[in-house]
Amino acid sequence: MLRHEFQPGKLVAGFFLTVAGVAFAGDAGRAWETPWFVVIPVVTGGLCLAGAVALLTRGLRRRRAEPRPPDLSA
Image (cartoon, rainbow, N blue to C red; front, top):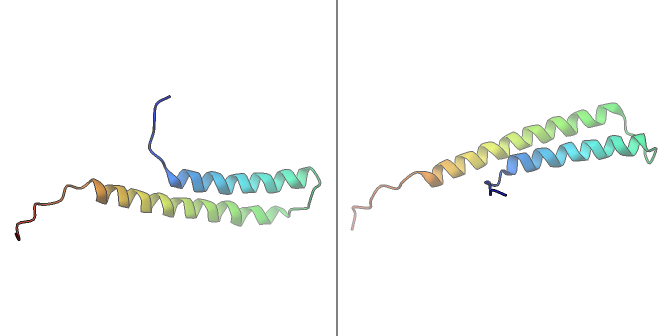
């Protein structure tokens, strides 16, 4: 299997979508009752947080990849 770079934004999005799926699965299995409007903020908040994490990760990787100018003060 080829190695790929770690993408924390996708991890955060997957976590929140899994939480929403578990909430609906518990409701379907009659383990608890989940109102339909509870999942909307979970999914929306998770996707917004995932986008923020992805932007932060992209900024850090771009900044790290830039070559540094030589230090001429010595």
